Image 1 (tube, protein in one colour):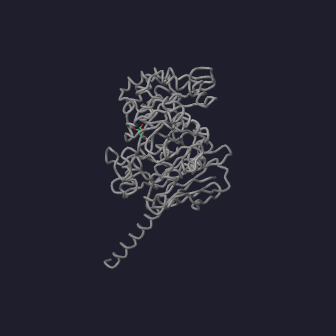
Image 2 (cartoon, rainbow, N blue to C red):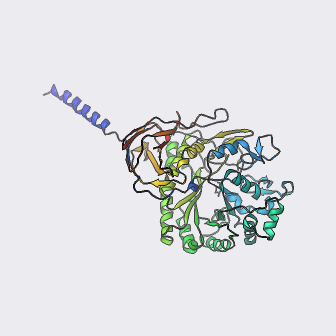
Image 3 (cartoon, helix red, strand yellow):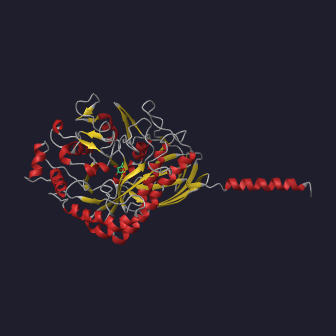
Length: 516
Ligand code: AHR
């Protein structure tokens, strides 16, 4: 008996070990293409360009006389990169800048446009060389829908009304004729107008009720001229300010087509944003990914309030500022919000896009902050150099989701745990495009473990699977001007398709896009 005991313990331990390994949790996904959900509005892949730091000047606009190759003042390298991104909609001119922007300063011959001080963003002098014509022509050049934010904080109703007339009226009217005098005969089409920005803060420090009343007033004078029909977006809450949503919906739901929501992903180190964009450990990796997942709670709870006043979901939740906000790049200008962009940001992008797609019935536009050289940018520039960020690559990989029909899925994921904290390791989203192709995107947040996802596909008539993956050896991998290809999509070979079932092995810290 005494002799048998150690053997028994060994066998028992071995059995336990085997069963623990066998039970090591993978993920499972059931996709039901027989019950298609709402269309994923392509505008969920929208962008935001503010007069802030080097987003516009140096990012988009270099001027016609620049040595940097350009088309009518817009950088050629940026134009080419953006064409490949299929940007659906672009919000402009802010942000906080919008509520101190006076549009008349940005029209007419550039040399005679008055300058102003950009008080929010570094106190730099804004020469107004990029104004209404430059923005709307840029959108036209790239086939982007413009989304214009009008000045409620420091602008008058008359100023707002005349700007809309200037941009969209075809009449023989004073503003339309002024536009013609400035070289543009035909009116532009403006589909989206935001009435003020962050009116609870930089846009005027208003109370919710004061803004709601002002929204109703300013909105009254956002006129539809001719065939141009404007969707009006009211300035909504930030983060967890549910009282703001309640007040706006109660007071003005019938006067709006959308209510904005702003939520930035920061480390939990307080304000102003702290934590380096590139120098972080695993605790910070998880902290940022965990904080970004709060978007799910925000969208769900703000939508629930909207449902009370708008059960038919006529009013969109427009997440027109989102993305990561870290400590600025060392040595960069204090007010320019410049930061690098790593594989961690790629994961942030994928997780948020998945959340928006899961709420496609309410979230019909989202605008990541910001387009170029600011916060979670698509593109970084330095003089004549340009580099695409990991976030750009996620937006590019996910393009097939734009305008496709969402497909419901049930995902069971193991947790990714580090220290005391955990989040689901796998996130996924699926859609079917006009040609019947099904796309499934995944993110694996675990920086150390590959995870296999067993997928059951109901109603998918696929014969093959192909895909692309975005990953790198280290969590903080990023692209620089010297090494621009450190993080970029590669062919994905981790998906095995066998009739109705699909097995996908997601590499650690990766974003994957599959086509079935
Ligand atoms: O995106 C930077 C700033 O963040 C925007 O100007 C403002 O709306 C927000 O607070």
